[in-house]
Length: 299
Ligand code: NAP
Image (tube, rainbow, N blue to C red; front, top):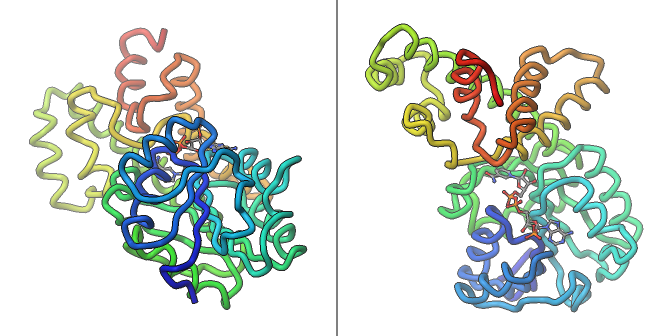
């Protein structure tokens, strides 16, 4: 059972990790942070009480929980099992909770590496976006042995609204894939609906007001339509990160020998935005793509 006296090593202070580590510090955990770009650790220390580490390895043996929130498979693999990988330096029974969105295979590989040194690896990808991280209202989908779940639940409580144990290691990432497959289709449908409304000469805001009361409502529709109508695309999850996730989904689908036609097509649309250097825009920029396509295409 994790107590607030437990020591947490938190790696990755990006849009998500920065506030998450902050919630842990505010909850009274003993938190040490490491980030590849050191200025983020210094900024974090200006807002929260804890320790900034100069390397991910520093004092790692003193922590009994290691939390990762980095970008992709390669980052997690290098940090955990690379040349200076931290797994080999962990104390027995340390629990690694990985909030990065990665492949299920990465999770299985890391769990095997952790087991070799008597530790546990937990895949715990999140949903809820940067706002959810700031508000401490994330949803966690967790893959781990049943005996570790309670500990994960206790440790992550300061930033979690909902947490579900999905099954063995890898199940959390597979659940996150379902989330991203659904989101990709929903955003494209919303972009097409708004584009149609605009081209049909309707008042797009009035259209959204009425359809939000019916069967077409969704989180994306409620939270993104205003910024889409305003042509503002800096309000959420970036196209580049979504493409990383959709590539994971499509690879897993291929492994399962199934087709995901809409996911595949939406991923192609995001590739077009990336080719136009628009990968930092948020995922709702699919509307911009439709508008640009009508007026001659992306540059
Ligand atoms: P981000 O802003 O790009 O942050 C990633 C952080 O990880 C950066 O601060 C980066 O350091 C750090 N990092 C990467 N490799 C590292 C390494 N080897 N050692 C130490 N630090 C390293 O990404 P994010 O938005 O926080 O997302 C993190 C994860 O959550 C991703 O897997 C993403 O798909 C997932 N996620 C994001 C959202 C969202 O809305 N943003 C929602 C749900 C899930 P640098 O400062 O050097 O780049």
